[in-house]
Image (tube, rainbow, N blue to C red; front, side):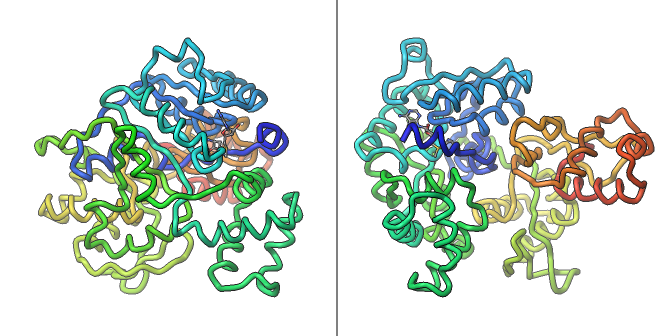
Length: 442
Ligand SMILES: C[S@@+](CC[C@H](N)C(=O)[O-])C[C@H]1O[C@@H](n2cnc3c(N)ncnc32)[C@H](O)[C@@H]1O
């Protein structure tokens, strides 16, 4: 397996749902005190594509990444150096047997993605044990695992592929043929299309051809964690699930990020993280724009929201894009803070909006000296892809990437046009695109 990771590296995508601050928000929304974190450990960090991003965005916190794959760790170290990071250390180690220098360190937050369901079955218990051992008493962990029953279709596809394919090219050919082949059922062909739309070679090898691959129901996962005195918070289930129709899709998800805690301390009602948060949405209204009930998700799916307070919040957030709006601002038009709070909880758990612990430094107006967000300037982090302050990947054309490199807040648009030898109109189009992708700073 180690060899397979060397031949087909796997690249994690930064994601809002894998961010410790997202976990804090979900804890708070579930009535549990959300501890502040200072240090963070990632087990199975691969090339550090996720952890380096976190470290760059959080210069006052410290980070440690562990992976068994030496070339991956070396690449992670090079990227950290290129980014000038001094708050991150990577070690090449087996998580099951951490070396002495880490033995005495405890972490406020531990992250592990693509490990639990991907390793040998007998090592899964050890992974939970290590989390339990290394977590500080008030700490929390975010751990991804393949989720049953949603994973069934993908699992079935993986079974079929493992029989007949050895390489990513063979998998691609087989999946492209799904519509007309003996692959049966709409769900399977939909899943095959989903996989194909995203699949890198690394993804195909590790998510479909890996012999260890397995999935767990949220119930069974909870039982395993509780054996080690770890509480599981399922933001998607528990009390948040009740009465939220948008969440009925939870069990259909193929993967989820579960939050683990050593201690469940009830929230002191006087403090509310949500009141200090900033919110954004990528949904856009459709139909009657005065009082829209219908909204479109980024991938064009149509959603209906009956509640007027929810409609108003979504309308306001959509109009502000890419800026984020504070709880206070949202209360100005919606008067009753409790109603606003309830609507925000519903929208966050339904993944319609996102909440951040600080204002996103973004703008919708392009100044004469445009400035791209600092992290988008470093090309070595993920070739061809750029991370924005919303913690997501965006893909830009090479021309747009070249333009962004010159947008450092000191050059005028005229100077950028001259350096790039492009027209004023072309630069305007590129900058509008970058603004739309949440890359231009206020
Ligand atoms: C599917 S990849 C996920 C990588 C990264 N977390 C991400 O989300 O992109 C799994 C990673 O776990 C690492 N890994 C597997 N077994 C490990 C072990 N026993 N100790 C440490 N890392 C391990 C692999 O080398 C690989 O980089």
